[in-house]
Image 1 (cartoon, rainbow, N blue to C red):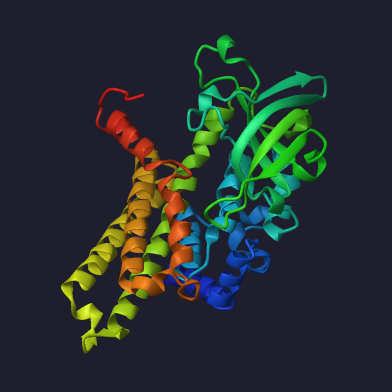
Image 2: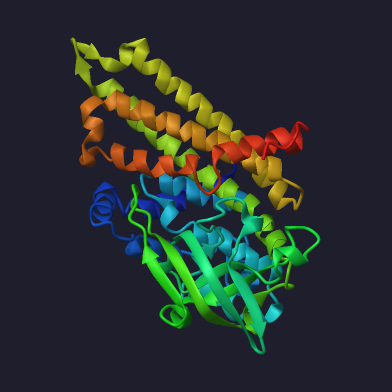
Length: 386
């Protein structure tokens, strides 16, 4: 696999061409208004890029994770923020891999065309965080529907999605043999749910990232909206996390390239003491180091993509790709800001906006510490640390 193949370059060129119509002024305006890049997401959908992973039989492009990662990378490399729409890429995988034929026929073509958006996934809870098996949101079967009660937090893009993937416990944890059993996945129609058992409370945050707290009070979900088998939801969620982490890695790689190129250009143009500041090793070495780290992270991303698309186990590679890319992009962000000095804090340079955006991925969708504990336990065979 090579990132320079003709097919990949065609994708890069296509995404770059679209992104060129939504430049710095557009993203600054969205950020200042704390708005949503509606026009950009609509254009991305119309061009078919968000349907990359949906099979052609359902109206998508039928591409692999490698190609999808290029799309996410290029959006960020061009100065945008794919966090506004990346959920559609990996959330759809749960429906595609585990949904019934009827569910796929009903929803996937509309998701591919943009008639429906599946941007939201509700897993995290305020009392459990990443200890997902301890979640307390419960779905109780009552005839032809499930009644859902509980609370979720940090659930993104609710206001800009039509559908949401929901993980809830259908069997109490005390009644299962393994704590990972007894959870189920549901597809929630947000238009039919908000105000009718589902309350949404937006969370204002450091990044212009639309995220929310959700409250479920006897929300009724039709039985036909259960995805896959009852009680197998945790396995289904894990199945989709490798794609999520690999795509997030690609976004961080795109951010990293943006920061390095921005810093290098400024270092060459900025004259202090009668010479470019980039002629100083104290400036150029950190930029060079950031470039090296991003290139290395990108190689791990390609390895994860190759394994995923070959339907081989890739949990270690996906986690390591996300770790390396998030770390590299954050380092590059800090170097870029430092290179710009005071101008790095000025909104017109975009550095401070991208700085805030890439910082998120040290924490979400999985923290760097959890990745380290995963590698220690599952790859190196060390004792479980929590």
